[in-house]
Picture 1 (tube, each protein chain N blue to C red):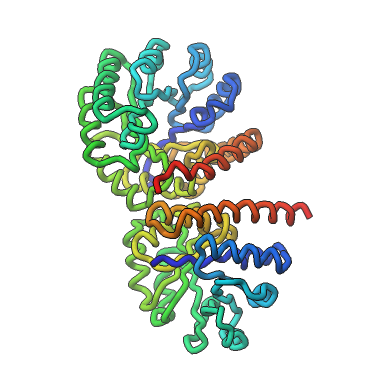
Picture 2 (tube, each protein chain N blue to C red):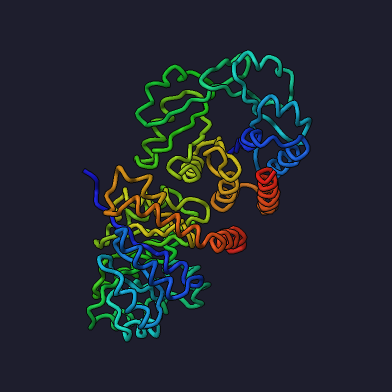
Amino acid sequence: MIRIIDRTLVILEAFHLEGQPLGEIAELLCTCGANYLEITPSAYRQLGSVQGAQYILRVQSPQEAKAYADCTDIKRFVCKARSDSALRVYPEVKINDIRDFFTVDRFRRCDRVRVCGLADCVLQPISKVFQNLRSMFEGSIEFAADNDCYSATSLTLQWAMLGGAEVVTSFMGMGNMAAFEDVTRLLYFLKGRRSRSALSAVQELEARLTAMLLASESA
Amino acid sequence: MKAIRHITDTTLLNFAGFMPPKERVEWAGMLDAIGVHEIVMPLCSRRELAACAQVIHTAKQAVYVRMETAQLSKALRMGVTAVFLEIPISYPMIYTNYRKNKDWARKTLLECGELLANTDVVTTLVLADASRAEPCFLESLVQLTAGMRVDKIVAKDLMGIQTLSACAELIGLMLTFGYDLGYEGNDRFGLSVANTIQALRMGALYAGCCLGGLGGGCDLRRLLQTTNRVFDYGINRKGAEQLDRTFKQQYRSERMLRRQDSRNADSCFPG
């Protein structure tokens, strides 16, 4: 089963939106097919409860996770280049170049790792790159390709098609990532993931977010 | 040393409905100036083709023709020197788009071959919707062209849902035909740049691109920016970026409309 982790709420924080629209977007994202929503602690506090939403909290240090240990809607925590399995904190590792693999050896034994970067993968034999990636980490991998080579959606789709279980996206590819709406649609067409009603929700979300961002920009 | 690849520009073709003939001639000249290898145009008037030929100095000028004998005859009468002959290669394309059947496709391809046989026209076969084609049918149609003077074959993805591995598989199959290959992706879901790179890596020599990713094709600027250190396209990159900016400014509204239309066209998919 392919799980989509959506980072839109983290990116939207820069737009200083109020709690209400954030809640609506979170609900729509869940309807569209996002399994987990990534969120920052401040946005999480502001958001309140959203029905059916499961969060991945982005923390600055593993110790920050202690304060949220009892929150049942937080599935786990992600932290840049640091991990703590007791606190359910897993690392985010950036691999800018395919030759960087040896630098991430210290995360080999983690239960879970998020791999981002990987933009130039598209210039290499892709199955070999993914094979290398899988052999580098013993735990499960969350795939979060950057869009530097305009190939993030393509790489994300390929990862999912080759058996990858978890991918990270953001709406419209904001924050230089794979586009959530494209990945959702492609997985529906190619793998039959989710129903057609989810696609209708994607259209609604597109319209809602575009209007919201345009309003925020003009303000 | 960088591998040599060529750019086939389809901007004028994709944007045919929005661009007046006079502007088309101007853009043809500008595309030629940045160094694209080939400029594909729609089948337009003899006067317009002649005007374009005057401003195009180094690039090749080709006319896109659907696989219909009437249209091909018209193009030949107009004295074109190169044609891009669209061959519907997938069943949905033949049955839904052309509203014909496989036998018609075989028969018409042979007829087109006969029309082209006694001419000096450089022919490029465009396998439209190659991403959804049955490999056996694709192979059988290409075999029918054995008697034709084919310059190259271009695989065209119409749906924009081709994965990297599917693209590699398709190009791998087409390399066995022994022709020079080209690839033209579709950017409906943002996959065209990656797929075009994949095709070029696998051995395709020609990349179908358009300015600003307009008309759903691979964005020329993005392709150049991404693969500049791997492939040599013989293109003035700065000039291409400038041209891309100018084009986007001029046709921004049409571009937005087209993107909207393609996103709303989910109903064309089965399921």
